[in-house]
Amino acid sequence: MVLKHLAAQGEAVGGRNGQSAVLGPHDLHEIHLPPVAAGVRAGALGFMAAYNDIDSVPCCANPWLLEDYLRDQLGFDGIVMADGLAVDRLEDMAGSIPAAGRAALLAGVDVSLWDEGFARLEEYVDDEQVEAAVDTALRRVLELKAMFGLLPEDGADTAAIAMPDADAIAQATADGREQAKRMAREAITLINDGRSAVTLDSIRGVLTDAQAGPVIVAGPFADDFGCFLGDYTAPLPADEQSSIYRQLVARLGKDRVCLAAKPSDVSADRWASAAAVVFVCGSTSERSYDSEFDDNGAAKAVAEYGATCGEGVDLSDIRLPWHQDEMLDEVVALTTAPVVSVVVCGRAHVLTHVIGQSAVTIWVGYAGQYGPQAVADVLIDGAGLPGRLPVTLPAHPAAIPVRYNDRQSAAHVYKDAAEPVLREFGYGAGSLAGVTFSGMHADAESRANEVLVQVTAHAGDHKTAGSVNLFAHVSGGRRIPRLAVLVDSVALTLETGESHAVSFSVPFERLMDEADDNVRVTFALTAALNNDDTRHTDDCDTSVSIVIHR
Image (cartoon, rainbow, N blue to C red; front, top):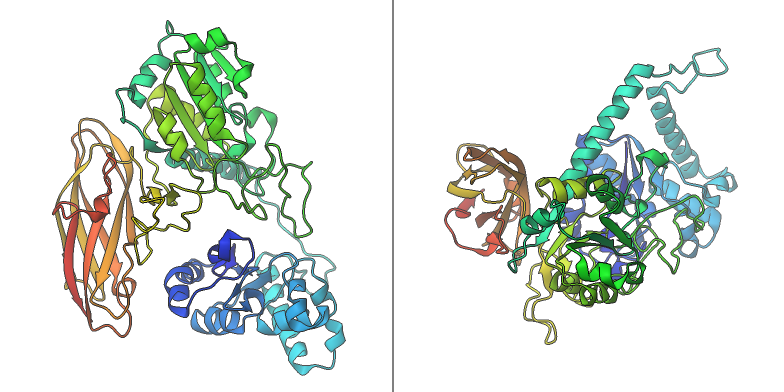
């Protein structure tokens, strides 16, 4: 298991891949390094240093990051890799390609990916520092190979590598598919429903009514499979590839379901008689074998329906590509049928127009190979929508970045965009739908150096599933507090009328700096199906405050 990218790649200026991360040591430790420590605890065998620099020091030539922090503080003794050609990118800093290799090696990089810099380290054959660092790097690489049985026994020319049992491979494949199906189901997130009399339930009734009019599946990804996959996805056989259009045809019949990649693909009379429209929009990070690639292995963006997200595909405009907002306007003008928009994307696109024009909007991210089936399960079979947004959705293309854990609210700051946030991180109108809470309380005395937060969840008149997210707001310390910090999350499945006790454990170190003697923490949770963000309410059933003394 090699974890990447170390570190703060998501802080790149302007959202540009591999650019500088401008942040101080506190934010680096608070946001970007805890996952590194968690990875070491989980048994990671390697880390990949990121392309970016942090305060001008490149990650793959940062001795503090790769040696002092990762190895000395965390005790990590696996391998550190540089990203593709990242070492050679140090040439301008180091003065030459060989010097770039030396800088990365001495900073703690053990393995480079197709760089010239490491291949020319022989030019430092008399450099004792380089000689020692090469020995150390080789030891780490050889120990990793030995762990996997890749080294020959004494006197043997090759290693005797035991092949995995065929039944074990088949079982692992089956387990992986079940995990992929579960993840696809959990990705489906309802971000707009009930703003009018037309709801998802009412649309589902029309879709499943064989006597109703035609169902039109429209949009650039209506019959697309690759859009559901992320970067660098292994190829799948044709019989395992599907699309939302093909899934609806399988369930409703080819005579009833029409495909309209462009609005003109369907006749005016079919639009006029349509019972419902499913508009599949978004963007794609698809990499195919006929794609053109940069020298670092990232696919190049193309103008027409190619990758618009992923590594090396930065955008200055985060509105939906290819004029999809205008395409949706055309669709709405052609029919009186309700429109369900399904947004397939891995980037926080501006969906303000989509939500405004759609009766229902569902966000599915990159739900993977079983994404089309999961969407059809929701639209036709009434499956739940347990997903919550893993990002904050901006309401306007230039009002970024907007993050739930900023220290200052972006609301009412822009004169031309009073509400720059369209949907907050963690939003999911279908997650734990109908659940209410009672008896929320916090205890900082019964456990050493952590707060125990407990609440009871009560299901409504139907079975529901989703996550309860616990957020904290800290005041009284020595820093401007963040508006909220996600400190724990618990997945729940509740049967009709069932009540369930929910417990969260929050270490003091998530809430206090070392210099703080005491702080006041307000905990709040979200699990409502409505459009209110309960993090910001004072409802005693969804928030509680406590003072913590060190």
